[in-house]
Length: 374
Image (cartoon, rainbow, N blue to C red):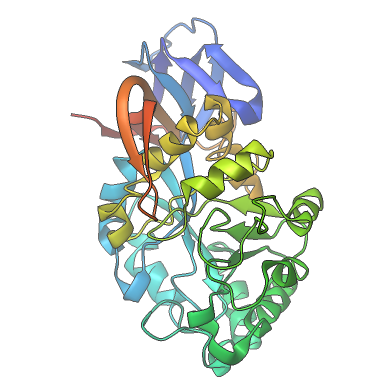
């Protein structure tokens, strides 16, 4: 089966594609991108006036918090927001990753990958921090689970928040790095309200590791007392640390973002940290989160790169996902770039007026239409 998308404006920063181009999908893969391609037995979709981008990758979202959350509803949420690949941000650890595979991954069409929580309990019971009792942060168990589920696990997640780690200090992060080194994969570290100075955590990270929630306004963060980006943060970026948004319920502050952006510290990746409460709150979904950064000054190409090529590279899937290069997965998101008057909010009560936003119109997964806006 083949599908031809005609009349759209392709924007694929990772592949260097931009402009009026058609996209042909065949046998679940990207077959061809070119000018005024002729139908050759293809089903044709007219996407005139819309932006055609690689299927969106949400580098940090959740489908299995408390061993349920979106669960089997993951497809409904992801398809309608243009997300073809969801990377779960540590919902499951060694004790529950098999359950997440059976309950969510194998039941839906969404491509679900995962950061394995360093705690065997994952986020099964969030009222008690999962690494407050270090016995659950079992390095051998995590390494074993990561190897057993190597096709699913793309890295290791640790929440370095004071209420989560308790008296454990930086030890959960140290253990996460040990697991990641054994697996040859990155660490994703949550840094909101940290138990120690941010610089102390950054010093433990390696090139390719990911700092998520870097624009939070709670506790020690990326800015010093004068509102300047800390030297340790700049040094971390220079040595290859990835800075991820991870919006969620508590992790974006517009004032912090504006200060960071004025000094050149743009996000490498834009993710929603979506879960059921975040979807009902100001995060809403990935396109809505993307729209905030569009109105904070990022270019459309920069925003698209941050949800396609860069997250694909961060999880070791460059060239396979997040691109429209021939041979890549046939995942495409068609967006409307709307102009008007729109309101946005952060997690700390600040609002922002904007004049543009991205709205999903069509989602294609593995070369087939998965969702169409009514």
